[in-house]
Structures are given as C-alpha cells and as structure tokens.
Length: 621
Image 1: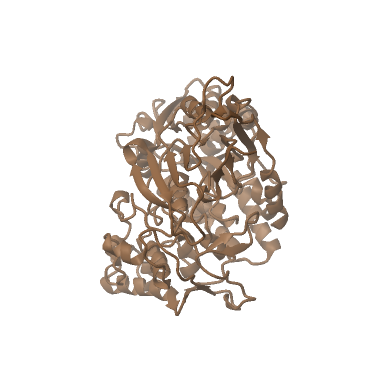
Image 2 (image 1 turned 90 degrees about the vertical axis):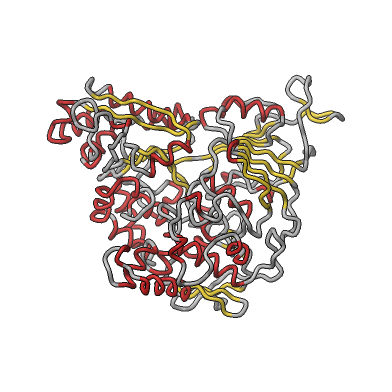
C-alpha cells in the first residue's frame, strides 16, 4: 500500500503549466494585454456542471453533493497529507491505535477523545453527544441507495438498518417488524455508539480493517452534526421509540436536504437551486483558524464548456470543471495552470439493468423482443452482457476520447489498488467476432433473428459519456442491421429519478472511492446489497447473491494480505467472466485554474475538486 501511496504523491506533483500570469500595476491581463482580468483575493469562484442532489450526509452518495458537504463539516479524523493509510486528529484529539489503547486488542472497540471548544456555525460548542447523535441519526435514517451501509456493516454485520431490525425481531421482512422490534433496533444502534466522559466509543460487530478510513475526512456520511440544532429543525428527536418516523424519508423531506450546520471551515449562505449555485462564507470561529478566502461561490449550473472556458479566461472563474476531451482547448491560455494525469481512485462503467421497469418507458421501445424494443429481462442473459462488452472499442476510446488519461479495466477494482489483485488477469477487448458469437447465442438465437431497439442515456454535459454511448452504438449496429441503438442526453436532475425507478436499460456512471480499500469497489459493484447492484433489479440482485456475496464477505473479513489478494483476484476474474457491468475505464483526473490559485494539493479520493480551506489567491509567483 505505501509504495502505491507515494506513487500518487509523486504523480500529483507533476503539472503542466499552460501559461503564466501577465500583469501590470493595473492587475493581470488576458492574452494580448488588451483587457484586464478580474482578480479578487477574497472571493473564489468554481464553475462546474451538475448540481448536488441533497446536502443530507445520510443520503448524499454522489460527488456533486459530497463536494459541498465537504466544505461545511468536519470529521473525527483526517488522512495525513500524502497518505491513504495514515491519519491525523480532527474533531478527535487522538487517532485510535492498538498502541495507544484506543483500539481494543480484539479490534472491536474504538475510542475517540473529542476536542473541546470547537464551535458550530451557529456558535454552539461541540460535545461528545453531538458526535454520538450524528452517527445514530444517520444510521437510523439509512435512506435507500445511500452510503450508510459503510457504517452499518462494520458495526452490525449487516448491510441495512432494515436487515438489522429483521435480525433482532426474528422475521424475514421489515414489514413484519413490530413496535418492540423497532425500539430494540434503535437501542442496539445506541448501544453500539456511546458517550463515555469526553470520549465517544464505537463497538464493532467484528474487526474491520478499513474502519478508520470510513470515518476520515472525505467521508460525508461520517461528518459531525449539531444535535440541538437538528432537533430544533425537525430532525429525529433522539428517542428510540420515534426513529421510524425519520427512516428512509423522501430526499426533499429530510432536514438537511438543502441546509447545513457543521463545524467546517465554511458555512452556508445560500443554495440557489434554480441556478445550481452555492454561496458560502468563511467560518470566523473555525477551530483551525479562519480560511484565507472569505467567500466561495460554487456555480454548478454552467453546462456549456465554452462558457466555462471564457469565464476562466476572463478571470470570472478561478477554477472550472474540464472534461478530458476539452482540456486541449486550454493549452496556451495565458494565466492558466493545467494539472493532468491525476491518479484518482475511480472508474467508470455502464450498469446492465437486468429487470427494467418497462411501463410507459420510452427507452425500451415496444418492451418486447420483437425487433422494435427489448424485454425487461434483456440483460439477464449473460450472452447479451458479454456481447455488449466485446462491442466497445476500449483502446480507441482511451486514446482518442480521454486522451490517454485512463486504462482498460481488469474488473471492478481500479488499477490504483493493484496491490490487491493480480494484474495478469483477463480484460475485455474490442472484438466484434466474439460479440457476434454471443449475440447469436442470446435468447436461443431470437436476438439475432429478430433484432432489438433500445436507448442509451447519458447525463448532460458529460460528453465523454455521450461519446462512450456512441462508440457502443457504432459497435453494436455494425454487427447486425436489425440492431438499433439510440443515444439520448438528459439533464442530471431529470435522469436521477428515472435511474431510481429502474427505467434506464444501462446506467452510465462513475465510482469514486469512499475509502482506499478494494472492498469499497467490490461491495457496491458486486454485492447483492451494493449501491450499483441496486440498479440491476431484483433479477440482478439475486444473481449477485448467488455469484458474488460469499466472496465479497470473505474479503472484508480476511486479515491476511496474501489471502485477501487471492480473494480480490478471483472477484476481478469473475467480474469479467460474468459481466454484471460493462467496465469502461479506470479514470485519471485533471484540474484547471488560474495561476493565482495557491495551495492546491491533490487528494485521490476527495469528493471535492478543491478543498477551499487550503487555498489562497495571490499574484505573486
């Protein structure tokens, strides 16, 4: 692990400077020197594309949401700069270790001494009870498709709070759990996380190697809330008899859907949802000292790259989101720094929905295997899935679309975690002969004889995914004239409910590591209760339960490194052979900002493009 970590640090220092700031006594100027560029050291403007779904830490499981939460809150501990396996204190004053007695010898009890004198944005003082409440509230809320499995699994040995309730009540379905069972479930949660003096103690179900990583900064699900403020604003009242009223609420009914109250370096001023714009100001009483930049504006409503580019050029934006295919347009732009090939722990895939909701669904045509559509279980046939995987031109996509800033996947675990698997395993390649072979086998030959029609949906403005859809479209349609694939762009906010409803035949999506361990990839991708497997329908979940669950569970329980590697190598191999998803590429990343931005440090799993607290702005070189 450490060798890989230092490689990331070295790569993060490699930058390509596309220009230098030219300035006079009147301030910096654009290329040609004819027009002044805007510069204000107290305001930072980041312009992105694609807004947050929610600001509730129990629900947020997308980078757009998490990057905003990241600015408003703190965690108990943080990663040591330049490392993904060492930690430093944050709201806790010590990092638990066996050596300092804060982790029990059996690895099941973690004790965190809580820092005193820390102020929330409203002036309230942090207490251990705030920490306890934060975890208990989020775990009991456990929204469907959310991130809380990462805490529920190590604490209780199950995937969801509903599973825990069923286990405690001794029933098969959550609907059968009676009131006594619900109360007992809450009490079990409250027993697992308790206050002892100035400490908060976690009692784990079993030893769990990545537990500290799950609590560290970058983890939006583990941020610390203000208990008194939460209750006053309509959140769970902290009583075991009432939690079910707040369990799995619709997104917009959650207390923190559009609000924030943390101890973090920035506090919320406004979320202008109609314009996808977040305004935040520095927390004057921040315990680490106030941020250098006083006001931050995150404008996620600018979907056109040319508009973002012009804003960067004029200095109206200090930094912008740059899709890889657009990055060459910034070459030579005066006053702009481009940083490339940042080895983020992430990958991109297309999830095969094995049980599509075909009711009034324009993406599946007729909804039948009649040449004018596809049936709901189209992707339950392994031959279809493998044919699609062979019909994608990986090498051309990586070379021509993402400009070499990616690699062909060995499975669901990205290359950045290759210490955990054998890289001599199989990978898919562009092979239309094999694709043809599998298409002819699918549905006992009916697919080849009748053909099919479906629509692939990509989220605007992610033109990289658009091109991926088009490359797949071209590969498939070139095999058989009866195969019809349409490509449609859709705004993120419009696409999300269709994804939740199971209407998309394939879900094009990326995964950024929550913590630096292969379990964080194999669980969401392959486990029957994983976040991405949830998009495959009940057929897909049963398939995962039969094929992957046992191995995934074994991997997280195993402490021997060699045995863990063997398990994850096998999971990589099976994820290729059984093709539950089309793994498109292991992703690298890039940044583009004005030269006056100082203090940027790359973090391979940070959900935010920028940690605004670390930044300052200066015209000095």
